[in-house]
Length: 272
Image (tube, rainbow, N blue to C red; front, side, top):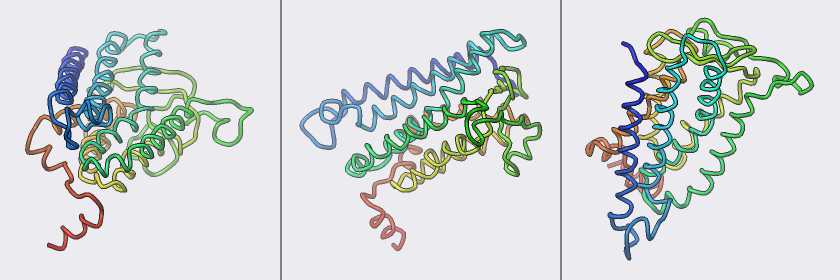
């Protein structure tokens, strides 16, 4: 299996097209509230706009990777810049994953969680970005560089971090996709915060089906597809294909959608 800059560019184009089609629905589909279109009544919090935002954001990653392929095999400032931009993009992914998950629950429940979930996700994005802070004058793990991981099987057994470089940002060719290495500190919690928001918070507001879907086609699939610990992040971003499929394949969208207004209703449905 081999990915390429051309494949990334095609996926970016498909993703952006899908995003535009989802955004268009907000202008043409009637709102659940009545009285006008989804855009008129719900604005950016409408489910189709939340999905459009997520698809557009992950498509930007595919576009970034398309440009990144032009620098693989060379060590220069652009090679490092693309690796840095990849880290920054990943930092804000929990926010968009949260919005995507919220789009699959009933509107009343979505609006109840919207503000809190957005604030928590934004905080986690800031925490993830703090992984770039390395200074010997700071306390604890912020004072030391991360230790590069050489064997992917050790990832869950110790405090070492995937995609780590002690001193530089590097983009290179992995087993079949881009491998990134980031100069970051040794604070494990800055990376783990991503998992808390992307794969635990959705359970609280009832989007457990979308969470499991994201878990399978994100970290689980990436671990299955490579033996290079620095390649995980780039492969994980192919989650954009799963997101696009989730909103464009009718039976899959129906499966991912929760129609229960509360957890009480959800548990009641289990008893039937």
